[in-house]
Length: 202
Image (cartoon, rainbow, N blue to C red; front, side, top):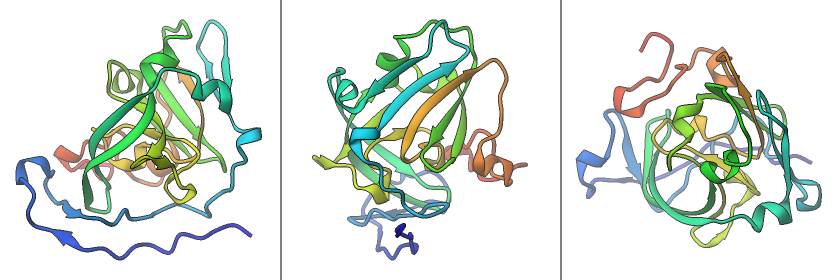
């Protein structure tokens, strides 16, 4: 039976440097709220794969073991959800998108991240290059829990967290932008938390 996310209950922190918190946000800690558009999928590692396709010279696919063998790094970042919670100094183990995209040749300018279950989010390719984005598979030294997108999720901390697609299965590189799941329902196409780009028109 699929697991259902039932929202979150958390405490606000007020002892954080306000310059780290985008306008309209509040800090939760130690809670890590769980919000999802649907049930939490179970993704067996034996059948997990990650693919980069679309406008590339040749599609590339990694199995779980091949993905874990790639160079990884520890990443400490603040994250900001469009529902107004922020979490500071989150620690992830992740593979940089620079490593993964370094395996393909492309002239694309946009990317669609695709997840188990059909969720998508769209991003400019420039926003996931040059040390700005990762595919994360550990949080706080532990395997990433399914509720938070395990076994692997996108991590794009400079944008609202709905852009960091959970249960990531692939990236499709494209020459033209195409709105993702929430963007088609009125969320902002870019999602900069420092500009409070929550919805179309913000």
